[in-house]
Amino acid sequence: MAMRNSPRSRWSTPILALAIVAGLAGGAWVLKPDADGSQSDRPTYTVRTGPLTIAVNETGTIRSADRRTLKSEVEGQRAITWIIDEGSIVEPGELLVELDSSELENDRTERAIRVQNAEAAFVRAQEELEVVKSQNRSNISRAELDLQFAKEDLQKYIEGDYPRELMAAEADVTLAEEELRRATDKFQWSRRLYDEKYLSETEFLADELEMKRAELTVSVRRETLKVLTDFTRRRQVTQLQSDIEQAQLSLERVQRVARADLVKAEADLRWRDNEFQEQKDRLTKIEDQIGKTKILAPAPGMVVYATSAGNRWGGDQEPLDEGKLVRHREELIYLPTADSMAIELKIHESSLGKLAVGLPADVKIDSMPDLVLQGRVQRIAPLPDATSVWLNPDLKVFSTTVALEGDLPELRTGMSGTATILVEHFDEALAVPVQAVTRVRGQPIVHVVDEGGQATPREVQLGADNSSMVQIVSGLQDGETVLLTPPLGGGTNGEAPQRGPRQDEVAGITPRGQQMHRAGGQSRGDRTQARGASTAQAGTR
Image 1 (tube, one colour):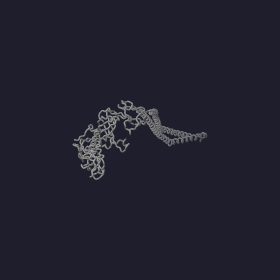
Image 2 (cartoon, rainbow, N blue to C red):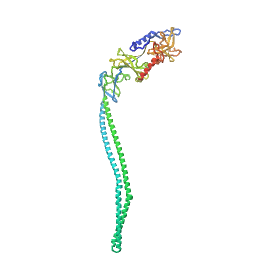
Image 3 (spheres, rainbow, N blue to C red):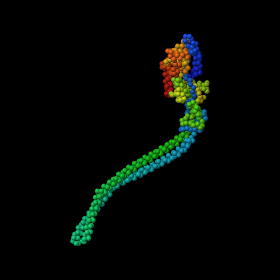
Image 4 (spheres, helix red, strand yellow):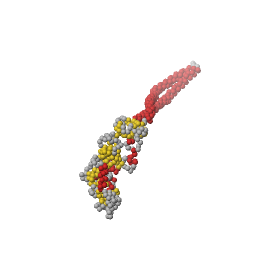
């Protein structure tokens, strides 16, 4: 019964390669040309049922699965003034890198002066606001008082000054009329005395003049009363009412000016406050930047320069050293830990369909050839590696992480290794070399050689492959012989075949429902569908 073995089993890459080579050597021979048109000078392969391991082999680089990446947090470009030796073991808080801070120190001094000036302007704006408030209160109070006085003046005239003036004018008229009556009586008496020759003409004329003066006085006093009642009162009331309106308008103007001055003073205060806060924030930022010129270890670990980790295009980046200029957010140092290690692989897109998160893998380190580590696929990138695409647009590789199991203190970041990811293993399977399969009108075929040396094309159904051998699900029997180099014009209808299986079948993808020919095996389509779902889920993660 076919079983799926663990990668920790005997099916490692060298043994698999030897088995394939041995099978090829044992199953191939050369046919000599026959007169009846049989095949000649073509290697063949005898189909046998045997174990078949589907695996993906790829080289990669060891890195820590848990590492701290330290970057330059200083804006712009800064020169390194001191850097710790690579490979040093550090503790938390230990100085790793120090960047040039001389320019920032100068900026801090200049910014501190600006902060002091901004603070002085802010305090001055505060005092000016209080002065404006005080002046506004004084101006408004004066304007309100003027309005109150104008109203009181009108009331005083209507209720006090005018009645008094009217009374005085009426009194003057009354007194003048009384004086006129007396002067008239005296004049009449004088005329009688003058007629009887008891009074001289001079005295008579004097009394007559006195009477006329009294008459004029009465007329003047009456006109004065009339002017007071008909004109002076109306004019004075109108003037006083106008004074009230003017005082009211003046109060409104003062209030508007006060509000405008207050708004202006408050706006100036806010501007000064914002300027002061901005200068303080800039000073704080500069001080923070100065603090970031010293990069300290956040955790214990071994120092690895980012330029030594092989993450740059072509690996030709200038190594870190004192005097080197580094950019903002540029990675400088890695602090990996040996508690959890992984190997980073670049899987070609043709093999991507075979992989899924969780598949087991055997990992061999180049510097430790006798050590075989165990691991599992932890992550498959959803998109191709950007660096590889930039270097070669036709090359699509996907970053794949295989997490190694166990405590591995002997491993170091940057070591090279090879991972063999075990996709499937069949204890018994019919398989042929991939070069024996051609395609005619999309259908895979092989050329089966009969006992007479004649090669006949036959349609077959393919299963999984490991880039060297491809599983034959149906169409061949154990012991049959196939051509390793099918004829170019040897299609079923004389049509030129296409060499090799389809790309999707090379990637281990077969139509749903296709049955695997192994005892107790589930359908190949079901297994492919499940693995495709796992791959899609891994890509989403």
